[in-house]
Image 1 (cartoon, helix red, strand yellow):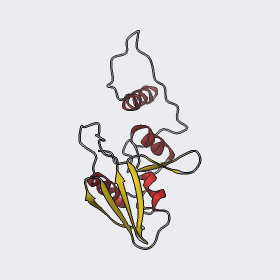
Image 2 (cartoon, one colour):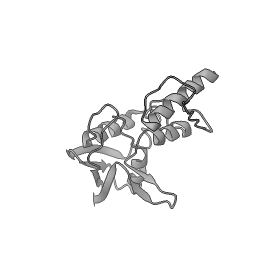
Image 3 (cartoon, one colour):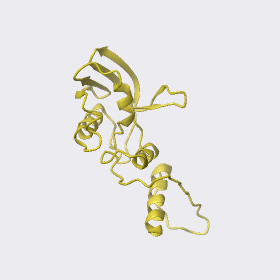
Length: 162
């Protein structure tokens, strides 16, 4: 069990550091990450838990996230506006590439939202979302079934994985 946790920590550390796993040598430094709970899965859309959310924030960026002052901070979404009672338009950060080298676009956000709506753990909190549409490569519109003031809160759970 210790080997599995060490291997998992090494993989997570490599992902966070943006490096590859190298053989340990005498000059290598060790990155240790402490969790109060291990992530139950590395599929961030599979399970809604503290361990998976912590891993998600280490390995990926959400559309927006909370600051320590309880304000929303732009991450992959740089701007957002409430177009009408049920539609929010988000402008996405340009020049972002995934670890695969693929470019981040609005289609990735749409795919992620649709996947979250089907996830056993996330579908209840994404139930108010009626649809998501890519307006262009860097603009997405999220439509809710009725006025929903917590839509920006939901954006903190949207981690397009590439």
